[in-house]
Length: 337
Image (cartoon, rainbow, N blue to C red):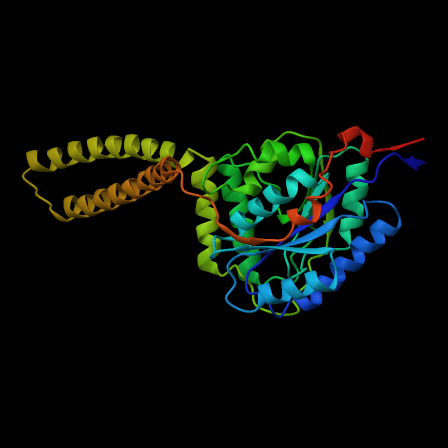
């Protein structure tokens, strides 16, 4: 077996207040890339791109120090916090013109970085998308396991195609990232978009590790907001549900009206049932208006054409200004006899 061309790999690592974690995760990622370079699995000018999502601690200072110590490390700094989805999109957008392969992974390394070797091998075998998928949730609390299962079940019922137990640990080929960049909505739900790309894909399973430093960036409130973002971005099921609910209420109201009319003809009167139905109907109307308002709000954001993120500093592309990348065709990354 011999390799025609070693692909250039970029690791995109979103960071938000990762001062305690970066000194631990950076050497681990560096060792993995250097090993892949030494074995000619990836090009020797592959990079690690840390994306500082408006951190309030010394995350950017650590990224700068890493860059000064080793040119393998590069950085991108937002002017403020835009969120992890924006950080992922920005990192891929900056790395895309210079990369054959892009792998995204969180800075806490709870997603096992040792899987990166297998991801690169799967890409060489022709897969454009390689998902890192958890094989168990034993490290999660009962509450987190239950809510995660409910999240995937609900999204499936609403018609949103997701890979269960997959977060943001994945490999994308150059053409897969090219296709992803055509999705220009202001708040892209990446986990739901990538399965829609349609390129050859596979899964690699691993055991998720406990966080060794820092704190989780996904409290319950943010998880709920993330779930709602996915629903309203990729599914019209809530709007259809409101319509069906309206038909159901109309049918129930007709039956109730006939029942009340019967009571009246028999000389009986009741006000409690009518009052309760009015409160119920009012609540359902407010819920319906809220759901419709979410969709209207998304339409407003799209028509405003505001920037998805603002980059304050970026040290990745400057490393390639002297020698721009000529992306190797996808089939040339494969091994031949």
